[in-house]
Amino acid sequence: MFSLNRVHIIGYQTQPVEIRQTPGGTSVVDLNLVVPYSFQSEKGDVLQGRAFHTVTLWGSMADFAGQYVRPGSQIFIGGRLQTDSWEDQTTHEKRSKTKIVALDMILLDPKDGQQPTPEGAKLTLNSVNRADVVGNVTREPEIRTTTGGKQVLSLGVATNDRWKERSTGETKERAEFHNVVIWGALAEEVGKLVHKGSRVFVSGRVQTRSWETQQGQKRTTTEIIADQCALLGVRNASALESVEASAQRRSTPRSQESPAPEAPASADIPEIQYASEVKVEDLPF
Image (cartoon, rainbow, N blue to C red):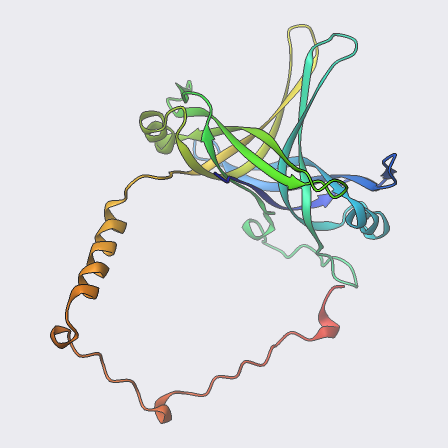
């Protein structure tokens, strides 16, 4: 059964691009993008925040980024979340880091450079930070209440990525495990209805937070702060009503059906012009 693991972000490159080469000669680039956003605090205040994401580009996309991406460049990235794990050679502790592996990249800056910030712009300056996941819940949801009395829930969701090796044609599969955080009324409902093994769709923004252990070591974790969580594979009364109504219409003889409304005469339909308003010389690439 297939799953979904997709991320869309619009952000700004924070540092010069460095191209690396694998032993096989493939180009690799790690972008470091900052994504401004706004969010609502427990008290209801609208606050401004910044999320930082590592984005890995491969092959010709990496070569293109090395040639054209500069600090401050605004970029759209479509990709998937991937968590790499390893063992610390000094402490032998298991470490992990989540990044975005790019599948698509679009440079968003016009040819003549970025425009000045419009006066009064607030909400329209928010960048895109969206993750969509379809997968199976890996553990029972954990719900708790903050000191402010708000419900917050932690959820684990697993997805699978499949691909073919170019050199061998062999099909390979990799499991990804996503940490999901849900707030408020949605958290309360998910805590009651979603269980280990449930299949869900989760949508929200990607957030990486850092903390320090009691031993003074820095740790990070990446989460999807979800504003939507839908149970999959369950009956929906509203949808079922439409399905049954459609089946009833198909079984009704045509002679008993209500006559269809008369179509308007062609002379009454206004002519629509489909000519594009976009000119090639206006495109930013």
